[in-house]
Length: 218
Image (tube, rainbow, N blue to C red):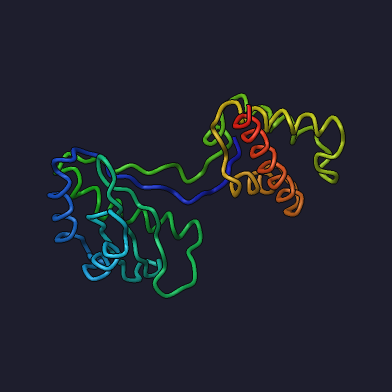
């Protein structure tokens, strides 16, 4: 089923009792082209409110990938990567970001993590509606998009009704798609022009907010 390429997430999961030992090993044993950035980690920890044990790693440019800075942020049961940022360029493409993340996982994280009982997992690089919505809401969105006149958005009464059905389905289930993913899915997978896709996303956000407010005021 068609999907969109997205930035992946990486998580290290294991026993809290071994996290300090894991952190020490990651700092000492990060393999080239990666190295632990002690100064950057200390600075990030000073600026963080209440979070200790932040680890920052830098990667030198190699194998057609740019120099980057990767953050491991502590959480219950391990670490996660909140972001990877380029050192010399303005931003990373999705493919560059995911390639760098995979390189860190294979070169640094996995060889060390397994010794301390930790697993390293990444989310899929290609995702579709079922990754973000319940089956009911995904069906409602596909029903709307498949039947709608893409030149008029949700302005036709029948299209509007199907669009409302989708918004209500998302509200009822509580599993909500991100606005950026919704816009990209409408444009890249379903063929809506960018302006129409963003207009629909704005209507979606307003509809969800209205339904949430209705619940609050009952």
